[in-house]
Amino acid sequence: MPLNIPNLLTWARIVLIPLFVGVFYAPQDWLSLSQQNLAATVIFVVAAVTDWFDGWLARKLDQTSAFGAFLDPVADKLMVAAALIVLVQLERADAIIAIIIIGREIAISALREWMAKIGAARSIAVSFLGKIKTTAQMVAIPLLLYQDGLFGISMLWLGSWLISVAAVLTLWSMAYYLKKVWPVISERNA
Image 1 (cartoon, rainbow, N blue to C red):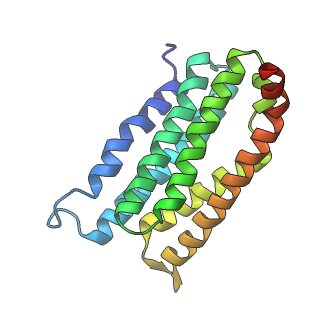
Image 2 (spheres, rainbow, N blue to C red):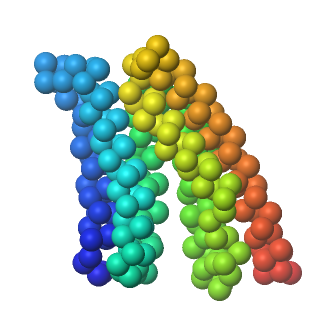
């Protein structure tokens, strides 16, 4: 495992996950619910920013590695899954939406791994639709975590709307990926 700044940032995201979840288990005399919401939102946003930053740094410093390419999406999926589970527990997100998003991430990750194993990884490269889906969920989750109103706008309402959009985009992007790889799957089963 190459020890470089991009990989350290990815590891930092993974280390932030228990801190992120733990915020909601802090005693109320340590952090009020509003402070918990703010702390969790800040931690999630920091993790999201480091996700973008570690990829940018890896390319800029020419420090890309197979290990980093493996660990980066794992860290992302763990943080998103942890956030969705917390949001379901807090009753700020519907369990069906969490299942759709987490289930898709697991299914597409497995599909990518299988496609790489058979030498067809390029046929399931990240699409623009997948990037829009990720953007929608990475904006929705902090809004749902923060929950309080901001400038007279209900963050809970806006976040709920956006996470629903993300769930629809999740299903759409999964169908897109399956359609792209179906010829390879059919050929392998023939």
